[in-house]
Structure formats: C-alpha cells, structure tokens
Amino acid sequence: MGIILSVLGGVLQLAAFAIYNKQILKGLSKPNAATWTLWVFTSTLNCVTYIIMSGDVVKGFLPIASTVACIATFFYALSRGRFSKLNELTPSMFCRQFNDC
Image (cartoon, rainbow, N blue to C red; front, side, top):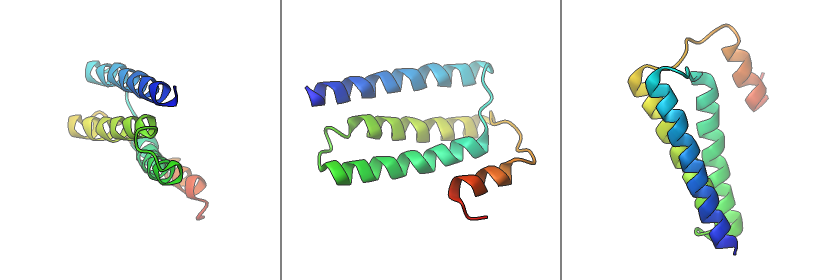
C-alpha cells in the first residue's frame, strides 16, 4: 500500500508542476529566482536523505519526482528568462534560510 501511495503522490506532484510550468509559459506566473534556488537545494537535500534513511528507492518516488520537477522548473524558467528581478530582500532571504548571517 505504501508503494501505491508513494507513486500516486509522485504522479500528483508531477501534474501540479506541469500546471505551474504552463502558467510560467503563458506569463501568468513570474517565479522568484532566490526562492526557487532555495527550493532546488532543499528538495535535493530532502530527497537524498529520505532515500538514505528509508533505504527504499521505490518509496522515495515522491521525493524523487518532486526534486526532478523542481530542478526542471528552475531550469525551464531560467532558460526562458521568466524569473522576476531580484530585489533588496534577496540577500536576507538566503541568510535566514541558512542561518549564516
């Protein structure tokens, strides 16, 4: 049952990213580069640690699907020049995320 739910969750996640990417293409959404950079990093870290901790790649389908879709969306928006302009709050967003400042 866990495998079915994991795969179903991954499929729903991919569908949500497909809808969001369509909005980016139509110009209805303007993603923030700083936010998406953090999401790519955090999603990748989450995926790797989940698979290591669970020891089951099949159950890791949801974090794998989420990470792949997140990275693909980031590079899609980057290649299309769809990111919004960075503003004065961007450095503080990174500092708060990583608690380095």
